[in-house]
Length: 396
Image 1 (cartoon, helix red, strand yellow):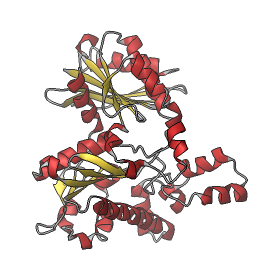
Image 2 (spheres, helix red, strand yellow):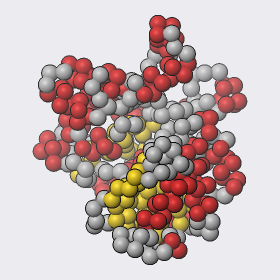
Image 3 (cartoon, rainbow, N blue to C red):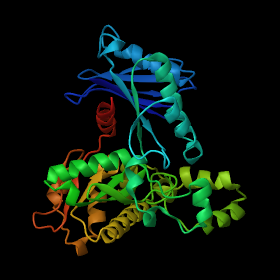
Image 4 (cartoon, rainbow, N blue to C red):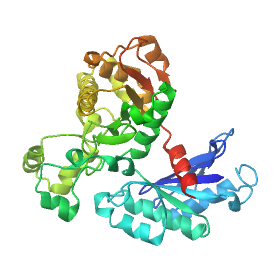
């Protein structure tokens, strides 16, 4: 079965065409600047990237260009659109309505729309992508895979906030968590790689990218995660603040004469390691700046690592132990000094780092703790597109 995986943002669209039997990526790419001027990047397996500048007024034109590229006479990955057997859509927020992936129907779309105010930047774009695919491929089954679904197994003690309970009853204000597709994929892959019984295991996943979150996975089920009602809570991230004293918002608003939208813009887009360092949200830039003696960049890296270590420690407590810790996503898979820094706080768990193995593990799976380390620490690359493909095949 050939599955087209679509990840639709407000002005961008990532896609992969995956053969579900071999799990081989037949073609992949990106549509950028949708609604502005438009750029399509397309790459068939084994060939160089092709970049096409073309107007994409809406997501429908963007998806049409993707479909045209897939069946192109010269570089197309398939001969006809009839070879696309299903489409898997990433949907960011499923609220409490969706605890697993679903075949998309009109009822599902309505339920997703009801979650729009929980993810106003993402959900409307996800729905636009679904409608565009339905218009162009009306007979192809479509599946929605939710970022929040994996975390729906959290108990009330983990998801409720210390707020008046009526806000939960009226507005569903609670912890939802994100990156669920990645946390699910990586926790299962970690258990398999280490030969653990998933149903009798304690795994902590650190998904460290520009957006970053940690999850506690007990016996294959998520019992806690660091992101909250929105992806702003938890770790210090690329441009997001993560946990702060809520009173800071009022204090800064008065000092800087900002309204609530202005404050939220600061917390979401001008904070994190980018705001702290004044350099960048990219750890390659931060690492270079630190090497040149930039103290703010050094502090930003230290604060980032310290916060991750604290969350890992708290989740070891929440599960009353831990068997394995997995680092994943852009920073987790590739930035060796960040992993070493985080692990330096975890000696009390009986963790010892294998420095050579840690330096060698970049973007590929591998154990980075010593043979006698009481807790296994590994690098496990995430593959959200493959996870969406597998979920799609399971349902159609």
